[in-house]
Length: 162
Image (cartoon, rainbow, N blue to C red; front, top):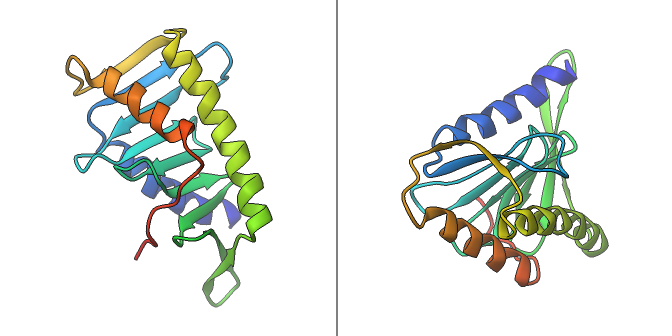
């Protein structure tokens, strides 16, 4: 079923959320769902705007993976590939589409607009902190600086994921 194939992609991403520390869950006035953000040990930042979209960045602030509109995206270095699972009765195949320059531009414009709005709330301390995990003094400031770095430069993609 379409649900279950999306579920497994979602599960992978949500599983990763449990590995984030420090990690915060924010309630923000302009967002209907809580936003969960956190770092992995290697410095990678993940942003979950509810269950969808999800954006994952490397330690340098370049996009690695995303999950948006029920589809998985992966960095190919020069563009994003959109991965769709296609199931028929006998097998599952992965359909990969590399975004054209225009598609990439439009996709990033929408994603970065969302990230900008989120960062503005964090900057203005216009949020309610619902939960946090593993955070020490200074970590929230590090998050703020990391978000600022991401939104203040043109969208960058990580080296291709292997």
